[in-house]
Image 1: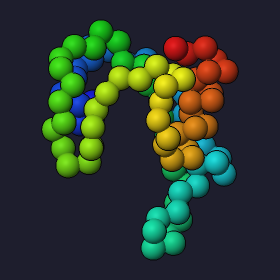
Image 2: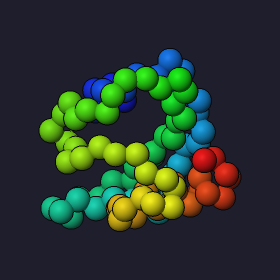
Image 3: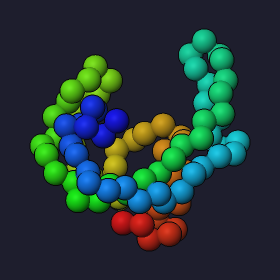
Image 4: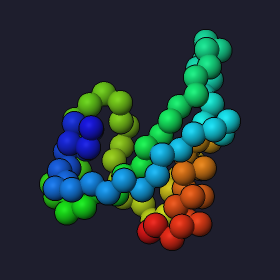
Length: 88
């Protein structure tokens, strides 16, 4: 996924957390609901150039943890966990 969506390559990944629970309920526009189970990894020894290689992204850019633009609610739970655990 990393290379496919960003053009970047990592030589190693570190598993940081697996998230679940009611805060990860997602409702699609057609009202279908699913519980997602996001898995967070830290990419190590990243190389390459950011480039959009799919039709899913509008823009790719690095952000500091406190500079991340508005995102969907599930992401805020992950970002809060990262801050609490001093991941970045």
